Length: 399
Image (tube, rainbow, N blue to C red; front, side):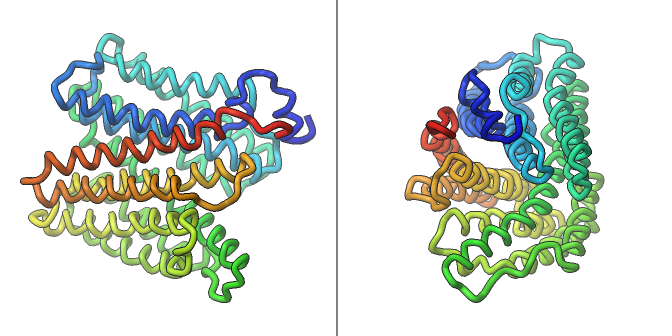
């Protein structure tokens, strides 16, 4: 096949396997909502899953390595062909990769009746195969600038392995190094890739409007220093999560990334939710670093767990929702503009983040705030699966 369109038209199987973003974005949204419902049942004392993971660890694993893993796959399988000029993975190879992701969700859910090593091997097979496929495409396309992405995928795999190791030893894996490394890797992916797409998409939108104030081009010297500072702070957090030096480094990194974000003209994007949501999502990264740093330096103000949700649900959750909505519209022939329904998804997720963080500040209201946060989360991601499901599950005639 000489073009992507020809390759897609040659596939006669289910439409969902005509492009990488389709199965993974739809399933990510569906799984984020369903897993939250299951977790609420688990916290309510219902033994709904025979998982070896405690409820909090299962919840953390399935968001970080389940949901986020699917979004990363959908993004990479769509973006890498554009970066390398090579054809995308479609059809049965894509279906097989998706099946590995589904298998990972299943074995983790029933891990209480399976050997821990088997659970880990099956769950890790998906990110390993994804990283191998991305490495093959980058090397074949001689796209050396993006080898860093494969390195971050490798870090993600190691983090998942550490998470399984902590769980197999009977520990609370949600508070272990595996979770911190996985979260740190996700944050660096957003800092690197978001640092490209946020100013780029903002510039394109502002130019169409005839605006003369444009974002600073990405990856200037300041950006590189900010990224290295964040990398150092996150590494310190992974290794010494409660050390005062770690807290200070996180505060410094947060300040630098606030300055980085301020250079991207986000205040001029209020008329288009599809653009301003990218800036708001990135804002949670430095704010999360500042609050996490302050939680370490002054633990009486806020718990580190509440601060961590600014990163988990804020940075990772909102940025991935923003990317999924934009990419789905762009690759299914939709206008790059968010309607009222899409804007509502963004606001629901922001409300979920704020309610969860508030629960860590006001423990006397924690029960009500947790319920509100969960309801808004389910509304955001369940709403995405409903609102965008038609675009993801069907292919336009001639598309």
